[in-house]
Image (tube, rainbow, N blue to C red; front, side, top):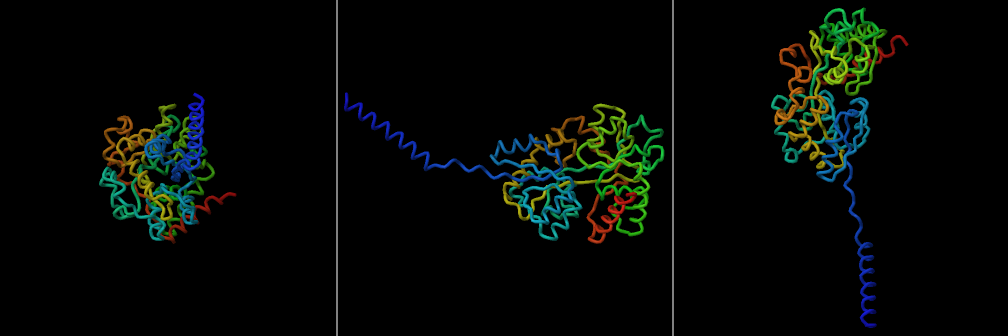
Length: 355
């Protein structure tokens, strides 16, 4: 009995030592590195990113920017990101300077869900460097009970009756473009005389204009409160605002609304390119694309997701406008280096006016 007890004690020691050595020799698994995802603040639902992490074990760090130009400047400065959301017109210069990676579509098979009308567009032939994310229109959001006549044109922003109760954005391409459209010019004009006329137009508007830093539904609370009667806005301003006040309406101006399109791109210096492609492929799943549409009110050109979208959203003309309302609409296009400099100079002079 004594011998048996000694053997048992010895065995306990061996087991303990064995476990201790095993613990020392087997380091804990290294956590997967986080993907860095750059987008507007609060646009991509966190639940979507969490679902990707739960499925793949890959965490995603959501890094917001205040403007897409800020994101481009950071990329040019060498900062590394894995997926960045950028508008159409910002992509060609980055491709030219080899700052975007080519996408391996064998890793993104769900690209087949993208509507044919949104593929192989001029700003990125064959979608070599970008995957369409969302698209929509920019128009006017109106408190119909606070205006004396129906608002129908960009020019109504300059109506003296509403001075002090109009709102725009701190986004140069949009505001300069709106001024150009109000004068009958193209929002992509690079003509110095037309841009000078647009500057005069903006300076005339400035005393009665509230400038808002863009974020989703930024104008909605101003419209709900009645502080603003007419605002530059998008579908989310209408849908969020109408939850509190049904008198809020969306107007695509007769001179033509502004068409915008966002894309997912992968910078050339991305640290985790394959994982980035997996994330984009995840976004393109029909049920995930529908979730993004249902939560953000931005339309994704994903044919396979259509039947999964909330009918109230799918059939809302502010989100998915009928084609006849887009007759005079224009797409924001890339500017030449000279044109870009001219637009920026016009904006800087506008911001400095009256100071």
